[in-house]
Image (cartoon, rainbow, N blue to C red; front, side, top):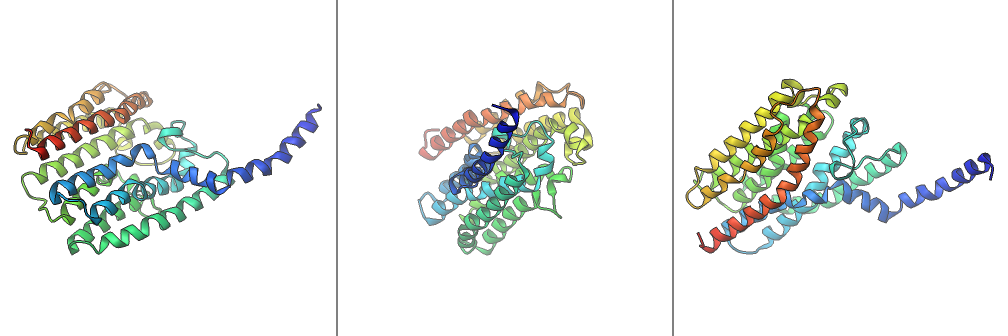
Amino acid sequence: MSPERTVRDNEDRRPDRQARRDRPLALLGSIVKASRPVSWINTAFPFAAAYALVVRDVDAVLIVGTLFFLVPYNLLMYGINDVFDYESDLANPRKGGIEGDVIRDREHARRVHRAILWACVVTVTPPLAWLLVQGSAGAAVTLALVVFGVIAYSAPGLRFKERPFLDSLTSALHFAGPLIYALVVAGAPLTARVAWPVWTAFILWGMASHAFGAVQDVRADREGGIGSVATVIGARATVWFAIGLYGASSLVLLAQPWPGTLAAVLPLPYLISVARFARITDETCEDANRGWRTFLWLNQPVGFAVTMLLIAIASGWL
C-alpha cells in the first residue's frame, strides 16, 4: 500500500475516532477522570466521620452531605482546575494519569472541558442548595466559604493557587472544610477541646501536603510563570516548611483528651517520608515526585488507622 493511500485512509478514519471520543459514555468517562476517584474518600470521609460522631444518627444531612463531598465536590475542585490549568498542564511532563488527565487534542479538550463545567453545575447545584438551608446560618456561611475556596483556587481572576502561602491554606481547606462544616451543621462548637485540635491539625497537615506537592513543580511553574509557595521560597525551604507543619500537626493533636492523643502519631509517617528530601535543590526538584507518590498511597493506611481509632473511641474500647 502506498504512503499516500495510508495517509488518506487515516484521514478518513479521523472523524470516526473523534465521534467515538465525543459519545456520551466517552465524555462521561472523561468527567469521572476529572473528579479524581482516588481522592473521593479524602473529602467525603472527614465530613461523614465528624457529623456521625456528633449526631450519632443517620439522617438526611449525613447522606446528602456525604454524597455531595464524595463526587460533586471533587468534580468541582479538580474539574475546574483541569479546565483553567489546561495550558500549563500541557507543558508539565508530570501531568497525566492519577495526577490529572491531560488531553493533547485541543479541539477534543474544549469539548470535554465544556462537558466538565456543565457537569459541575448539574451535580453541585441541587445538593448544595439543599444543604445551604439545613442547620444554622453559620453552617450555611461555612459551606458557602468552603465551596468558594474550591472555585477561587483555580478560577480566572481569583487564582488563589498562584498566591504563595494562600495557595497552601486554600488547598488545606479543601479537605479540612468538609470536616469543619460537619461540626458546624451538627451543632458542635469549634472551640471544644475535642474539636479544635482535630480541625487545626487537619489544616496544618493539608498545608504541609500542598506545599510539598508544589516542590516537584518548582522549575515547571517558574518556566510557566506560575507562582506558588515553592517557587517563592525554593524547593529545600519548602520541604522544611512542610516538615515543620507536619510536626506542628502532630503536636496539636496532643492537646486532645485521651484517647484522642493517639492520633498524634498519624502525621509522623508523612513527616518521615518528606524528610527524605530535606537536601533537595531547585535543580533536583522533580525528585520530590517520588515522595508525592508515597504520599498518595500513605493516605490509605493512615485513613484506615483513623477509621479504626474513631471506631474504638465511639465504641468505648479505649
